[in-house]
Image (tube, rainbow over all chains, first blue to last red):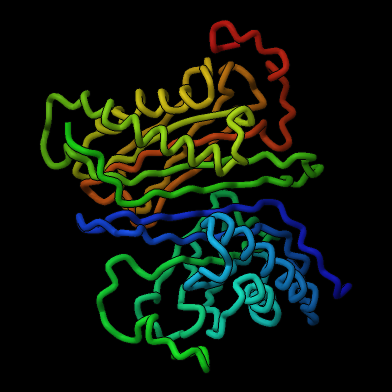
Length: 198
Length: 194
């Protein structure tokens, strides 16, 4: 297997959600979030593959592509993004480790490059599932993981993915925290930004 | 009639490169715009509801503009369309039917006199319900390559007293369309059918 991995993309799907009111209260400005999802062939499906470097490199490629798409869908600059998250769903002929290979070693660097910053860990989730599986992408503030108003999640699903030999890879970004956030904790105005936590 | 109160506005765009066959030269796109609004008639039987159709027209136009923008910004690139609604549990199916006129009006208004009937589906459902929205060619319903559909839904909608209104558009045929029938290039364009 080569280590030069280039994602074979079947589909790219972009979701944008804008919340304008909640419980009858207007949200001004509306909270907005976007997710970009790639449905790709899993080159390691159906067999045990020891060296997952092909998937690791695919993760790097998709980190840039999906972040660019999600930010463009919000129509803002990368530096205006407030929170982010990533997730992957592996089709039935793959391993959960395949999702880990895509998400963890190399996907984050191009995400942070596109956003100009990103000191905080990128929260993530992964699962194995069939077509139409619901993928919950966790969200956290990009510069300080403890900002409580920005703990959130975004569900995405695509009815025809992932097929058995495919992987769904998602990156989500927001321009805001939860609508009507009011459970205290660290505020975004209080971020020190030294350690990615506070 | 009551004002239109939007809780959430959602767009979804799919760009389809292939489905196991040769990669498309220009990947077809499908897009959906969803508006989650308060159902002003939820909770009881209201006899006179038809006036709400006019109130929904500006929302329809906003959704069509969002769709065209999501598909690249050119209304003439749109080749297929459809519409649908999911009514929350405290409403009735007839509330979903309110979407036929404003949804169709909005798409024709922006697409410049599309001739074919806008295919549609509707149902009553809870949060997370999924709806398969049928899609046909905008000028001739019988164009076989453009028969398609798009599944839409949202984890937190519709709540019992809400309506999920949807419009969908496509920029072309199914990615590997090859089962014959009337072709888009053969449309006469007189009756919206062929």
